[in-house]
Structure formats: C-alpha cells, structure tokens
Image (cartoon, rainbow, N blue to C red; front, side, top):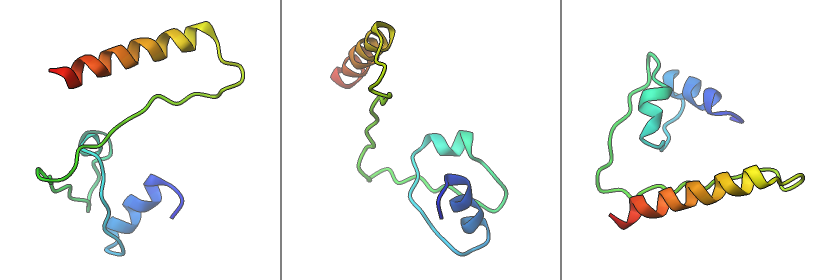
Length: 76
C-alpha cells in the first residue's frame, strides 16, 4: 500500500487493519470501514512541514503562529 486511500480499500476488503488518528473518522468515513476509539492509547503529535527552498517570511510567520497556538493548547 502506498496511499491512505489504498489502505482504506484494503481495510474495507478485509485484508488489513490499521491505526489512524481521530480526525480520520470525520474526513475518511467510508462503507466497510469502522473506526474504534482507543482512549488509553498515546496522543498523536503533529508538526508543520514546508519546503525549505524558498522559505518565505509568510511561511515563517505562519509557523510561529501555529507553534504559539499549539503551545497554548498543550499548556491548558
């Protein structure tokens, strides 16, 4: 499997199981696939990724804002 869509097709066909993040329930719902919450599992972490060349002031500003927002969410 090379893509998330291929993984979902394999799951729906009964050929695979996988771990997925919670947002997949909302954005990747499809017939034949059931998402089961794992409340005792580790929290997933996200990071902002961009192409290094050319890095612009706008990208650096967006990264700073997202970092500040993420820090404020984990502090509370």
